[in-house]
Amino acid sequence: MERLEAFEEMLSKIIRQAEYEAEQMKRLKAAGKEKSATYRQYFGNRMLYKMMLEKYKEYGLIE
Image (cartoon, rainbow, N blue to C red; front, side):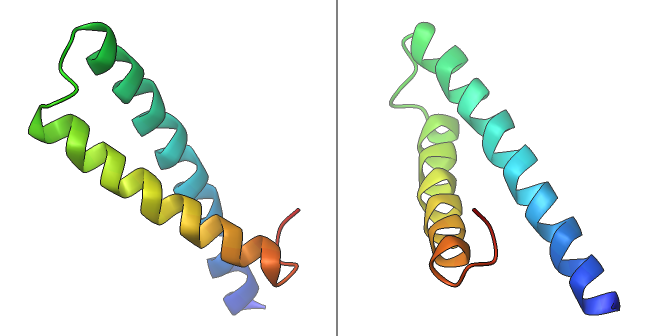
């Protein structure tokens, strides 16, 4: 059961972090800072989160 709890906690943190970074990207874009290192890091992270969540869906771990 510990493994399932760890997975659920990790998934929750990934989703929260992805939402936070998406909001930060909107803020940076509104300020015209799409070329900043921070924006680019968030963009790279977004791609990673998207890939991870798609794999979880593929294996039926999330809807």
